[in-house]
Length: 104
Length: 151
Image 1 (tube, rainbow over the protein chains, first blue to last red):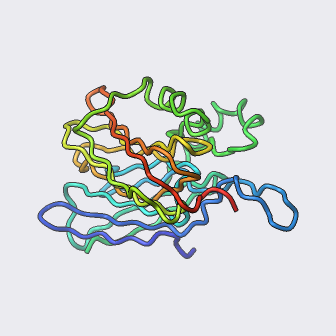
Image 2 (spheres, rainbow over the protein chains, first blue to last red):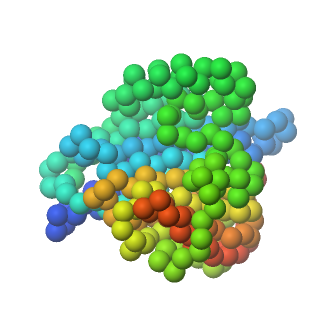
């Protein structure tokens, strides 16, 4: 399955900075269908967890007020070039995904 | 990987609630505080997420634009020099549900997070840092010229 995560992870001086963008509409449940006037049900990414070497380095719980195509940036200690990050996500519908990205 | 066992466990314990949660069916994620994210009042959302209301502190830095042309995408950066940070959460008082996001900061991860949020109208943004059991916050007003919540 094609992933939804775009990840740029860079290792520098034993710290790894991660910039992550998820391709997701983040439907808030506030919008209305212009034709029918009915509310479009909410559908958004609820959780994103980033793991490195089996250890969770970042965890985000998101609400509907996070912008479309959520962007997250953080930095953690450790990580080296060529190592892998695992990104797990959960949608409000219960759908989940797991993707990996290499540290550069 | 997202720990199937945990998901199933959460579903089983939360089973009785599933029927009632038409709006937010996402009980699958154990860490997601449904009550806090669904709360329409900032004080209530803070209490249910963090247990109490935070105290303003100069140790928390919140970076957000003072005027946002587009409320759908407001860049926000929160950082703090305080030690033993457990979580950072962001609230927008004027939004239909004020709690925007909660970030868990495990040991070894820097207490600095950037993201982009939606704002329905001009309002205060509040960042709350939980560290050593203390709740510290910083607030800032951001003026919004085009709201980001409607259609």
